[in-house]
Each structure stands twice: as C-alpha cells, then as structure tokens.
Image 1 (cartoon, rainbow over the protein chains, first blue to last red):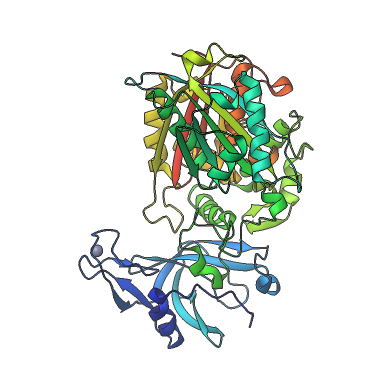
Image 2 (spheres, chains in turn orange, cyan):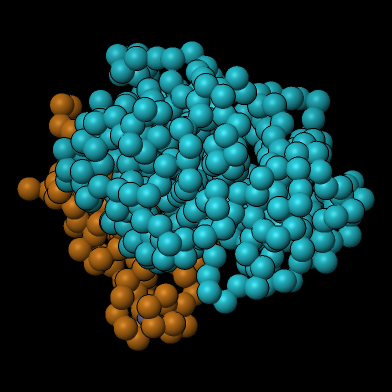
Length: 134
Length: 386
Ligand SMILES: [Zn+2]
C-alpha cells in the first residue's frame, strides 16, 4: 500500500468517493437530458440544465488507451514504477482514468472489456480500478 | 490578412535571450531582455509601443512598470503554449483594425530555474495544469498526471489504429536535433541517431526521453505593427498573411478521439484562404512540438498527409532541411529551446529575412506556424504583402 496523493476534497465529488468505500460506483446524470458526466459539475454541458443526480454505474467499459509511467511525479509512486494508467470508456458514455489490475503477464490492450473493482489504498480512500471482464 | 482589414499587419522586430539556465534572472528580467533585443532589431523604442501582450509573465502591471510604458491596450495570457498563436492573432487584429499602432508581445519562461516539472502537484504547472486534462487533479490517486502522459495515451491509440511506429516518431526527434546542430543558439546541439532515440529511457511509454521537449529558461519578444510602418524600419517587414484559431474544449478532460483534426481542419481552411496560399505553397513549417506525437497529429490535421499516414509521411524525410517541407529548422522545443511556440514564430520571421545561416531554407516565400492542442492556431508569414 502506497501513500498515493489524495484527490481534491471537493464537496461536489464526495458522494463518489464515499460510495467507492462501499464498493459502489456513482457517477452523475443530468435529470433533463439523461446524459452522464463525471467528475461532478453543477450543470449539464449539453442541455445546460442546472443540477444532477447520482446514479450507480454498471462498472463495465472498454479500455480506450493506456500508457506506462516510468517516471514518478510524486515520490509515493517511485516504488510502483513502472505503473500503468488506462483510459476507460464506461457503458454510460463517460470516460475515467484509472489503473489496470490483472494476473501477472496480462497486459492492457485497446478495446479490452473491463469491469470496475474497488481497492482501498488508504483508510480514507478507495480507488475504482479495472480488471479484465470476460 | 482578411478583406476588411484597414492596416495589414507585419512583424517589424524580433528579439530573443540566450536559452538555458539563468538562476539570477526572473521572468521580468528575461522578458525585458528579449524586448530590448526586439526593439533594437527594428529600431523602435519603448515609447513607440502603444500595445502590450504578455505571456507567462506573472504580472502584466509589474512588467509594464519596469519597462516604463503606458500602453493603450494591455493583455495578459496564461502560460500555456497554445497562447503564443492566440497572442499573435490578437496583435494582428489590434493592428489591422487600427486599435493600436505597435504592439510588443513578450514571453518569458524561468521554468528551469524555478524547478518546474510539468507533472505531479496540480498547482503551478504540475499535473496537466488544466491545459491537457482539465480535471487532472481528480485522477492523481491513480497516478495520472502530466501533459506527456496525455500525449502518450493519444499516441498509443494512433499506433493501434494506424500502425504508426516508434521509428517514425523517432525521425521527428532525430531531424529536429540535426537542425539544432546547425543553430548556434540551441540548447541541445549534439546530433543523435535513430538507434540512440530508441535506446533512450521511457518517460511515459510509448514516449521516450527524446519525444519530450526541453525544460529551460528563456524569453522572446515580437514587435507587430502595420505593414506601412514596418517598411520604414530597420528590417524588411515579414507580413502576417493569415492567422486563425479554433478550439475543441468539449470533453477535453480526456484525449480527443480525432487527434484534434476537426479544429485543425477549420483553422486550415480559414488561414489558407486568408493567405491566398495552400499547404503545397509552404516553404517551411514551424510545428508546435511539445512532444513528437503533436507534430504527427498536426501534419495530418492540416492536410499535409491523410489521417493515419503521418508516420509513413514523416519517415520519408519531408521535414528535413533538404526535404519538401523543412520543419522546425531551429530545432524546435525538442532541441532548440522550450519557448511555447514563440521561438518557432521568431524562426519563421528570421527564415523569411534570410538570417538563419547554416540552417537557412533557400529563398522562402511563405512559412506556416501551427499548434495543435484543445486550442488550435496557425499563422502564415509571407515575404510579400500579397
Ligand atoms: Zn442535460
């Protein structure tokens, strides 16, 4: 377990992080046009409706791209090098940046179906990571 | 620049500092140094300036106070490289409309001495600094940070979709370093081979060390005035034949699916129509090269080659000094100096004046600056007014 940097303590996103600790993936949805968005925002960029609902996402998506860090921009990641960041598009149409968790020898690839998993990394932080979904 | 303009704009003066590491000089010192050089270049004085546009200088007010000037138009812009093109477009519009006579554009970067890392803590220039990935701090616990990683994600997709290879990217880095070796002012002048490129360490895979721009201190100034006035000054005017901008902010927290092709196509259509030139008429290209993939995306987006063909097109050697479209003849951000577009615009001016020594393009008539990012800009410079 490494001392990863905390996300900004933004009240707008607290429901997401609190739900992650319960192994639930919450994202925001516009009650007017139904489009999802994340991170949270006060209004919808598509229809400009003010306000949003939190909904539970499927946790299913595909890897759109990935990269592997060989440099640690935070000291906490030095021990984790090299580590992979993946860009995932969820079924609900939104994108997230995350990490890929799989058995040794299994690499991420573009188009690979993945599903969310919930990894407590600090007492106060659970990350939404992804593993292959067959 | 367009049919309605009253006073066609031209670049009258350019000035640059030396590039490297100047711990004793702050952004104000560096900016004033570049401005003195630019004024001396064209034979004007501070008192001739009635417009001031600063980029990456912390306080426009302090800068103007130190210069002892009271412009009729002042503008400060954030230290994102895309703003060099925006500033030049704005100066051209201010002059062409008759709002001001003579604008000084001043950029200063003390990033090396300030210890800027372009990754990590999202304050300052860390993270993607809100430039690439506007919600970057949210993804910090996953280790996602830096403009370099943003471009690595884009490049991985390009390789997947079109079969683009590391060797093709390497050609960009090798070519620009070769150009820098002919530029006495460049920070990095030692040529390297494709094998050296491939053997260098990864920073964020698939990108290696030489896919990344330098981090250094330096400053640039440009003096833009009316073509009519510029003709009376010390240097031959370099005419701003076109300048255009488009953006793609929607969804820009994540890499664009089209590698910014849509805004680039919009800008290309606009800027070539203004200039009365097409891409085939360009004698040289100045391509924003924060990372090698940006060069590839730009060539595709502006129509120098079809979408997906950039890697193969570049590997044919078109960007070399002796190629069809000599690019970043100064060495660019990858090898000359990280000046966030400004150095490339100055290089375009110096090339058109014939001041580039060993790296001089033979009798250029038109040179195009292009920058790909969530804000796309392009400026076409010409040796003649029309
Ligand atoms: Zn909506």
